[in-house]
Length: 227
Image 1 (cartoon, rainbow, N blue to C red):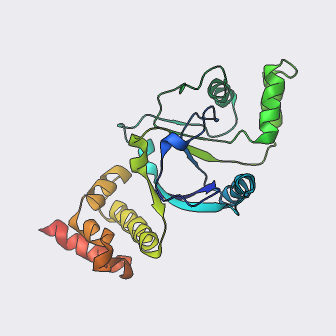
Image 2: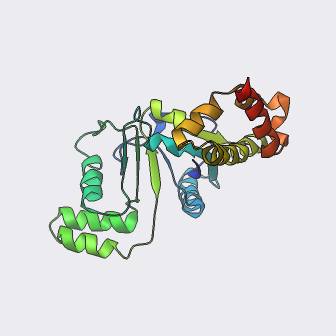
């Protein structure tokens, strides 16, 4: 389905430019978002303060079908665990700025300042891996998704106005209904809707279809599918 996510920065993001991503981040260089708006707001204030701005949170739509679409190479960490730690340590290795993996999209917890400090202690041999992971069981829940390749950007869309937001809401309702009424899985329903002429009309702001209810758009889609 579609997940609303947020990107905190010192300025508004009008288009994603992967070349502006920082090297040696948790999941490598890429465009990072989170499903927790408050975390994006915090980061926007921090980086905005460093740049002399108030910061800005850009809202985005993430098409989660990327994780089931075999054309994308993805990696997901449900929680802090040994595999996550090894992956973060790999990517944060400052000996090289080269990307250390070939995943399109990576999702998992954040190595914030507190976690990063513990990683440093672990790397210096001052705490064991077992103790490190045990302590993280009580850490505040965090979340991030990194879009690492140009290909991955097909699965994210910036929301900068009401029409796009309404299109997203309408799309979510139609996909859920298609899955239920037509017994389709998420990928099949997505392919049906997003390849339709109805969706093309909905996406064209000049038609003002985004002002209609999702039920009206769904009826148009059903009529199209009958033809």
